Image (cartoon, rainbow over all chains, first blue to last red; front, side):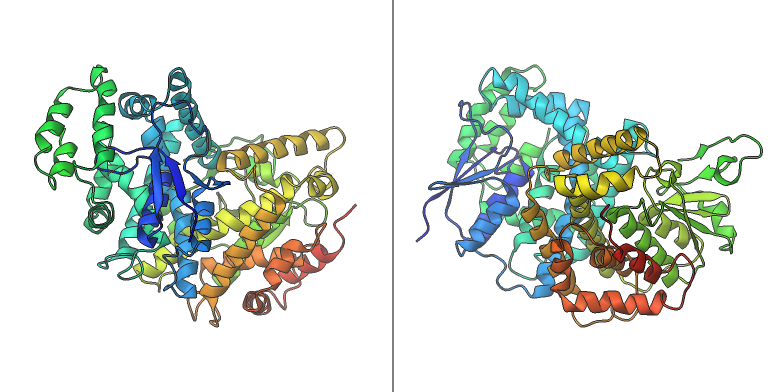
Length: 291
Length: 294
């Protein structure tokens, strides 16, 4: 049937298959549509694709953006949307635009611009997965790109200082989360009982906010007040990703944490929490959340 | 955020001390008390020679919205409208002693005065409306900006001559190169710089398809009554349909969807026909149809 497909993307931690929203979106869609993807997480090798992660490689074809990757998967008959009506398909596009405009700036800010978050969590994590000496340069470049994007798209007058821009983007992000929560209501997925493209995108954006332990967590706290969105993320993680400690990908990331352990910014208690959780499977995500 | 601008005595209009209100930080209590005055004005660039596709679309959207709310507005064309605006974007309205720019803040300002088109919607519908407005801004407006500023042929033949037309050489070239540099930087940041024109047109097609499917056979997007989403979609689609560019590729994409063209015609007839003032979209259409090529 289809040629073997390989996805190259950032790895995961804190109970997630990936920390990168776009990689997570593609992985979730692949699970929903049943596409057989081999996931190669980027580790300490020299073959780091510099800008355009995630990348799908199938024989000679190389595709880089999530929207294009999803289109390719649909053409290969892995379609999670075939039961949707035309209007629901249109709604999907609209809500994805809403996520990109309102939620993505705050997400980028939490990960890459907020000084405490960046220096204590994001930079060490990404640096540990990139080969030296690129690890000295690439996280800084990603951070600058994120700040650039935020300022260029949201930073014009009448907002004249970074603090005002930050306040505005977090306000927009919280409003966007409220809108998503109202739209989801009590149903399991956004369009009934089967997950679709929109669920993949929403999961890709929400799960990193929900699970990653940052020092500055205003967006996570707001998200935790919306129980239906939290339940939505947990359901997808449990049913479609089935992340347990026996998962080989997780064991690799446990070994990777050796680099982080030596960093003074990471308290050693994090590792002991992981070791204790090795015995219990279902409780491991919860344990890893507790600082 | 409030900015006070002090003007020299005797200088008309906006240069006097005023409150610029933008975004959500309106002094809503102060403005809500006053009714909508008769002399409210909407400022945009010069219609015949200067205004570009994207600005015309935004301006028409605001005009349509105010017409739908039944609020009188007079359109004033100034060459420096972009610089007068508190956020740097046109159009902006001057109501009483307040200046508000862009559709989003204008909708909220009008709501503070007690007029609203989306009160009858429930929460899920409001979420949908906001999502579709973001879709139009994300795809249609960005595509218009791309076509105007990143497609070399259009830039050379239409945009540069029009954008700097009120100013003498070399200021006209400097201003348009500056604006082009700004827009290209933004395109690069959001990942549109690497797109070809065909990919952009495909995105426009996808957006129009989504709008067409959402509209279906209804008169407006939320059945019986128009909302700000209808105004925004009308502003963009009508401008695309009636503006002559180098190629007709963009308007052809919209014309593929008959319910969208019928929607534009319906709103034009209902809210803009029978006006002989400057604010009429019919006049704007006639003037836009004249060749924009110099």
